[in-house]
Structures are given as structure tokens and as C-alpha cells.
Amino acid sequence: MGVIHDNTSRRKFLSNAFMTFGLSFGLGALFVRFGQFITPDRKEKMTAKVLIGNLAEIPENAATPLEISGNKILVVRSEDGFNAFSRRCTDLGCLVSWEPAKQQFICPCHQGVYDKNGKNIAGPPPRPLDRFEVVAKGENVYIRLKA
Amino acid sequence: MAAGIEHAETKPLKGRIIDLIQEDVPDHLYSWPYTLGAIPLVLFGILLVTGILMTFYYIPYPDRAYESVREITYSIYLGWFIRGMHKLAVHLMILSLLFHITRVFITRAYKEGGEVKWLLGAGIFFTALAFGFTGYALVYDNISYWGMIVVTNMAGELPIIGKTLLLLLRGGEDVTEITLLRLYDLHTKLLPFLIITLLLSHILAVRFFGFAKLGTDLKSVPTQGMHKFFPEHAMEVGLISICLLIFIIDITMLFPPQLGSPANMQEVASNVSPPWYFSAVYKWITIAPRNAALFGVLFFSAIFFAYPYVDRFLTKRGANMQRINIAVGAAAVIVFVILTLWEIVL
Ligand code: FES
Image (cartoon, rainbow over all chains, first blue to last red):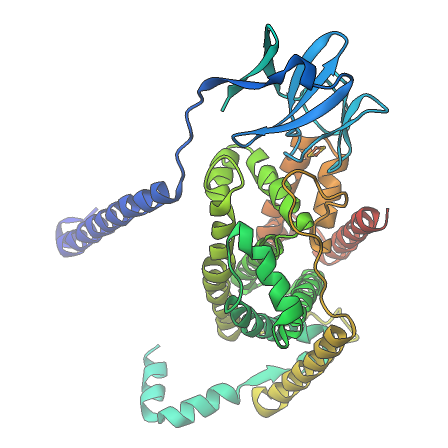
């Protein structure tokens, strides 16, 4: 093909290509930076042990709601000991509440149901409620938080 | 092209403007289904004005947002009226967009140059939905607070982009004051910019590619003849706008806007439910398995966007798209109505 006479148009093409590449690279890098600016950092998880009360204070066969640094928690005390569940529904993040009559956790958003061990038994929730470890030391009860 | 330039040079500016506004438009625009594009535009104007007015009082901070909406609704002079018009106009705008889309879909008006119009229009529709969600969250009563949590979580469930989208919307892992500020910025700055750009392009595209030519198979519509954009068409749109305005004012006065109880982070509202235009999707993700449901929504949106190209593809293979579109359109409307009623009534 007779490309020899085509030099000017080829030069034009190349310079256009360089321009386009340069501009899009430059602007692209700028927008990536803008994107990073509005994307928040993920917080590092750290664990902490928090005192939640004294054995006698926590009522039996009932759920005590707590809020520790943004974690909404239900502490359920039954015959077999303490359990601490996150109230955040594993479906879409509504708050579950404890239904003492049925001994179940109910989520009002899409009628998710969990049994008293936090296992998802009905509705859309894909997995059991998140749990927090409970440690009883003498008279004091602690919760281990991953916040 | 050269002829065009010559022509433009010989004609004074005034003459060219007169040409533009007196441009002939096809007679079928007299028929009401073809005015459905003008209606959302008029409503958008109302939304813009009332929305700007409310930004003079609204405070986008969790402790203050609800109170400021309350002030607007109950104490500021005519606040209830402005808020009521804004609220009603959103519902009507999305409703009329749905009608407009259905009309375009059934008459296949997206053919022959209409693809661009369709793509821009689809963009407008999704932007309008984003407006709906962000505006709903700004009210910050209990239902809207939990609605905001559920919807942002839902965005977070999306495949691949979900997590990033969630962080971007919330400005962190959790819903905080940053979240409200972001939704506020979206609602009052980014989305208006986006929708105005899209609207202008959509209207320019209509002027540039012309109004859709109708096939002769739609008998009920006058397809012959032309009339002038100004005054005939402009008068018709003006009449529609006045009727709309009167309707909105009346309904707002008869049903002044209300406000639920304030957001309660400790107790979920018992009736968490999105506005009606999200009800169908909300019901759908509740009854279908979660991931399949979300993929379904994404898939449906993609097909919706690319429909003119799907049409072209199928037409080349000899499908009778006129029939198919009527069937698909009817099915979509029926499913939408059933899911919506199921969510709202039951
Ligand atoms: S958020 Fe709990 S069931 Fe959907």
C-alpha cells in the first residue's frame, strides 16, 4: 500500500493519539485522586474487653440492650449462661429485637427470624446474628468487642 | 454542510431564532400520550424551584435535619405548601416518566436516531430515582432513617462494586452524619447538575434527530400534517403546565404534607417501606433469593438501557417487534403493578 505519501496524515494521527493519550492519562490520574479523596478509609479492627456489669445486675431470661461505641448489642441471659448478639440484622442491617414470648429475635424489615442462639430460622437473613464473646470473671461480666 | 453555513450567514440571527421556534412539529403531538415528555419537564421545573426554596431552611445534620423539616412543615410561613408541592411533584414526575417510557416503548419511538434519545432518557429516569431515594432520606424521620440504612445496605450487596459503593454513599462503614451530608450533596448539587445536563441533551437530541416518525400501524393517531412549534405546540404545553400547577396546588392544599416521628437509632420503624416507586423492587428482593434478585434487577436495568439495540438485533432476525413490544410492555406493567400493590396493600 502506498503509505509513503501518507506521512503528513500519519504524523497528524500520531500527534492526535499522543494528545488523546496524554490528556486522558492526566485527567484520569486526577480523577482517581478525586475518587480516593471521597472514598473513606476502612477502620482497622481492634479488640477490647468492656465491662458490662455485675452478675446480679443482669436479669435472667431477658435481653438487655446495650450500645458500646456504636455497636448495638443484646445480652441474653438464659439458664445456660450469657450470650451477646449484635442487633444488626445480617440481611440488610435493620435492628432485631428480642421477643420474650417466642424466645426469638425478630427483624421487622423483611420479617427475618432468629432463634435464641442467633441462628437464622426464617425470612431472608443469610447467616446467624453476629456474636460477641462474653467473659465472666468472678462477679463481673465482660464483652470482647471487635470494633 | 457548506450550504448550511451559507444559509446561516445570509440569515440574520433573529430570523434563525424565529425559524427555530417556528419549526414544524408533527401533528401527532396533539394527541395526549405524546405530551407525556413535556409533563415531567414541567414538574422538574416545580421541583427545582421548591427544592431551592427549602435549602434555605434545611440543615443537613442528623441532630438538626428532622427539626428543620419540622420547622418547614409546621412553623415557617407557607413552608408546608412548598414542601407539599415538592413532595407531590416528585411522585407525579416519576409516574409521568413511567407513562412516557411505556408510550415510547410501545410505539418503538427509539428507532432510527432515537437510540440516543432513549439512552439519555433512561439516564434521566435512573437519576430521578436517585433523587427520590436521597430526598426521602433527607427527611430523617424514623421511616426514612431506616429506609436509608436498608437501601445503602442493599447497594452494598451488589456484586463487585457493592462494597465501594457502600463506602462512598455512607462515607464510612456506618451511617453517620457524613452519610446525611453526602446524600444532601447528591440531592442538591450532583444530581441536579447531572439531570439538567441529561435533560438538555435529551431535548437537544429530540430537536436534532426530530420527533419519532410513527408507523401507519397505529391508526388512532393523526400522523399526517405538521403544525408550528410556536405558537401551537407551545400553547398546548402551556395549557398542560397550567393544569398541572393547579392540580398540584389543589392536592397540596387538600393533603398538606405530614411528618413521622423522629429517627430512632434504637428502634426500627415498624413500617419501614420505601416510596411507592421502589415498592416493586423492594417486594421483589424480599420474595426472591437475595443474590438472584439483585442480579435480576441489574440484568433488567441493563436490558432496559440497551433496549433499542436489542430491538435492532431481533428485527434483523425477522422478529415482529411491534407485537413483541406490546406483549413485553404489557407484561412489565402488570408485574410492576402487582408487585407494587402487593407491597403497599398487604
Ligand atoms: S434487614 Fe432484617 S430481614 Fe431484612
